[in-house]
Length: 94
Image (cartoon, rainbow, N blue to C red):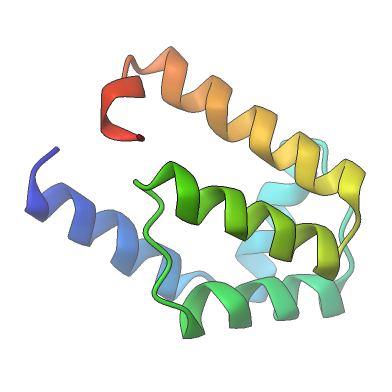
Protein backbone atom coordinates (compact mmCIF):
# COMPACT_ATOMS: atom_id res chain seq x y z
CA UNK A 1 0.00 0.00 0.00
CA UNK A 2 1.34 3.38 -0.84
CA UNK A 3 2.70 5.73 1.76
CA UNK A 4 0.05 8.27 0.69
CA UNK A 5 -2.86 5.93 1.45
CA UNK A 6 -1.36 4.97 4.81
CA UNK A 7 -1.04 8.63 5.77
CA UNK A 8 -4.66 9.30 4.82
CA UNK A 9 -5.82 6.43 7.06
CA UNK A 10 -3.62 7.59 9.96
CA UNK A 11 -4.83 11.18 9.64
CA UNK A 12 -8.46 10.07 9.59
CA UNK A 13 -7.94 8.09 12.81
CA UNK A 14 -6.36 11.14 14.44
CA UNK A 15 -9.33 13.32 13.44
CA UNK A 16 -12.11 11.08 14.76
CA UNK A 17 -14.38 12.66 17.33
CA UNK A 18 -16.17 11.07 20.27
CA UNK A 19 -19.53 11.57 18.54
CA UNK A 20 -18.26 9.93 15.34
CA UNK A 21 -16.87 6.98 17.27
CA UNK A 22 -20.16 6.56 19.12
CA UNK A 23 -22.02 6.74 15.79
CA UNK A 24 -19.80 4.05 14.21
CA UNK A 25 -20.08 1.91 17.33
CA UNK A 26 -23.87 1.95 17.04
CA UNK A 27 -23.75 1.36 13.30
CA UNK A 28 -21.59 -1.76 13.72
CA UNK A 29 -23.29 -3.16 16.82
CA UNK A 30 -20.86 -2.11 19.54
CA UNK A 31 -21.93 -0.79 22.89
CA UNK A 32 -19.47 1.74 24.31
CA UNK A 33 -19.96 4.65 26.65
CA UNK A 34 -18.98 8.23 25.94
CA UNK A 35 -16.16 7.87 28.48
CA UNK A 36 -14.89 4.70 26.77
CA UNK A 37 -15.02 6.46 23.40
CA UNK A 38 -12.98 9.32 24.86
CA UNK A 39 -10.37 6.88 26.23
CA UNK A 40 -10.21 4.97 22.93
CA UNK A 41 -9.66 8.18 20.98
CA UNK A 42 -7.04 9.35 23.43
CA UNK A 43 -5.19 6.09 22.89
CA UNK A 44 -5.51 6.26 19.09
CA UNK A 45 -4.49 9.88 18.89
CA UNK A 46 -1.65 9.84 21.42
CA UNK A 47 0.02 6.61 20.35
CA UNK A 48 1.92 5.99 17.16
CA UNK A 49 -0.27 3.02 16.26
CA UNK A 50 0.59 1.41 12.93
CA UNK A 51 -2.70 -0.23 11.94
CA UNK A 52 -0.89 -1.94 9.09
CA UNK A 53 1.19 -4.01 11.53
CA UNK A 54 -0.38 -7.18 12.91
CA UNK A 55 1.76 -6.95 16.05
CA UNK A 56 0.71 -3.34 16.68
CA UNK A 57 -2.94 -4.20 16.13
CA UNK A 58 -2.72 -7.14 18.54
CA UNK A 59 -1.38 -4.70 21.15
CA UNK A 60 -4.20 -2.28 20.30
CA UNK A 61 -6.82 -4.98 20.90
CA UNK A 62 -5.31 -5.65 24.33
CA UNK A 63 -5.54 -1.93 25.11
CA UNK A 64 -9.11 -1.83 23.79
CA UNK A 65 -10.02 -4.72 26.09
CA UNK A 66 -8.55 -2.76 29.02
CA UNK A 67 -10.63 0.31 28.10
CA UNK A 68 -13.86 -1.57 27.38
CA UNK A 69 -14.01 -5.34 27.80
CA UNK A 70 -12.76 -8.50 26.09
CA UNK A 71 -16.02 -9.04 24.20
CA UNK A 72 -15.89 -5.57 22.63
CA UNK A 73 -12.22 -6.02 21.69
CA UNK A 74 -12.97 -9.39 20.10
CA UNK A 75 -15.87 -7.93 18.11
CA UNK A 76 -13.65 -5.07 16.95
CA UNK A 77 -10.94 -7.48 15.84
CA UNK A 78 -13.41 -9.63 13.94
CA UNK A 79 -14.98 -6.60 12.25
CA UNK A 80 -11.57 -5.22 11.24
CA UNK A 81 -10.53 -8.59 9.80
CA UNK A 82 -13.82 -8.88 7.88
CA UNK A 83 -13.43 -5.40 6.40
CA UNK A 84 -9.82 -6.06 5.37
CA UNK A 85 -10.80 -9.38 3.79
CA UNK A 86 -13.86 -7.95 2.00
CA UNK A 87 -11.62 -5.42 0.25
CA UNK A 88 -8.92 -8.01 -0.52
CA UNK A 89 -6.30 -6.13 1.49
CA UNK A 90 -4.94 -8.98 3.62
CA UNK A 91 -1.41 -8.57 2.21
CA UNK A 92 -1.23 -4.98 3.47
CA UNK A 93 -1.96 -5.91 7.09
CA UNK A 94 0.87 -8.21 8.15
